[in-house]
Image 1: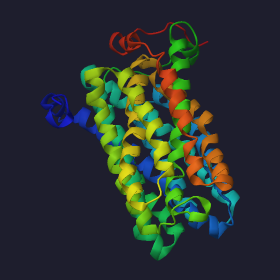
Image 2: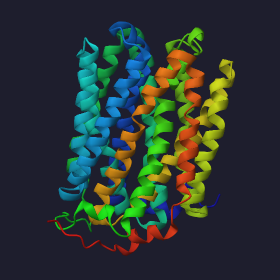
Image 3: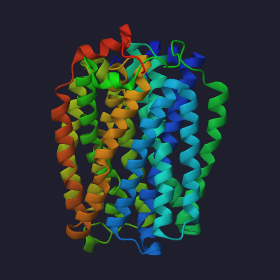
Image 4: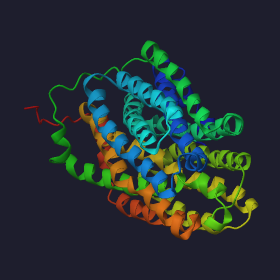
Amino acid sequence: MTDSLANNPAFWSLAKQPARRNALLAAGFGWMLDSMDVMLYSMVIPAAQKDLGMSSATAGLIMSFTLIAAAAGGIGFGFVADRLGRTRALSLSILIYTVCTGLCAFVHTVPQLAICRFLLGIGMGGEWAAGAALVAETWPQQHRAKALALVQSAWAIGYALAAAVVALIMPHFGWRAVFLAGLFPALITIWIRRKVKEPEHWTPATNVSARALFRGKLAPRTLVITSMNAASLFAWWGLFSWAPSFLSAPVSKGGHGLDVLHTSTFTIVMQLGTFLGYVSFGPLADRFGRKPVYVTFLLMAALVVPLYAVVKTPTALLLLGPVVGFWGTGFFSGFSVISSEAFPTALRGRAMGFAYNLGRIASAVAPFTVGRVAQERGFGFGLSITTAGFLLAAAIALFLRKEWAAISQNEVEPTVAVT
């Protein structure tokens, strides 16, 4: 494809400019480390369950608590991003979730673990909205989808990095030591504060109320984008929170009984497909349009997930994993660009924080639901129910309108003032 990232000199010429390059790196590193810290938990669930006497339903409930906290943190950091700046919100959110990841190494009870994961979620929720807004406001419209897709692809790297960390550390030092590795990314915040500048046209939003998101012409897009994201997040968190356990759980519980090394290897291979899905979305969206490509990814995910849940052999799992990763996560690049283009600068941080993180609240039941179903009927059946989320998200996405993207180009500001 002539519009691919590899064959797009205009894109890479812009990427050499310090402001755009640093914005990409900051948002990408933040998202990668977010992924790593979150997925460390998913990778150590079986070991933590044995040590803390925790059921699958309880482990899923803790993940649900994390998502609820992420929703609150994301909405709150949306205000920080609009009022104090994208870079301040980004660096503070990274600092919070990395420190809280390290604290997980010192817990001795399930409630202690739940508290640490809840606090971690607050920082985790703030990172995405701040980073995506930073990139959207730094890159021109014709290359914005590719830039945000590149940032989103960092999630796959973080996920694979988590698998590698677990494979290297847990067999020798136990699951607690895995969380200590999550402390090191806090150092990236120093670089962000020194090297990453605010977008040129960003100014502190002191005269625009968030109530504008629920009035007039912005209300329909807030409703559609938020509900669409809620459905897709339900599917994603339900599927990928439990995918490592699906690989490692005993066959008697609907899993495949793989050891730590093989589980980590299969997870890393899956993330190769995920990475390709993320980076492919941008060029495809620039060529064929955001909406049709986004819907196609969701429908394909709904098709391949049930197949992955019922295959019996390790070889089939290894081959199908990257396919699931490609379609089942690549659509997130679409949400980044769709949501960033639908709202004006003065409200972008709050709008993206609200749309993404209210969706997290709605999807918070997914890890608990899949864990509970897996406990009663096996992991394969539990993972299959996430198909409904992909289908619902695709149906809601049909209500997206192409003209909504014009707001990011014309910067038509709402006139609702703070009272």
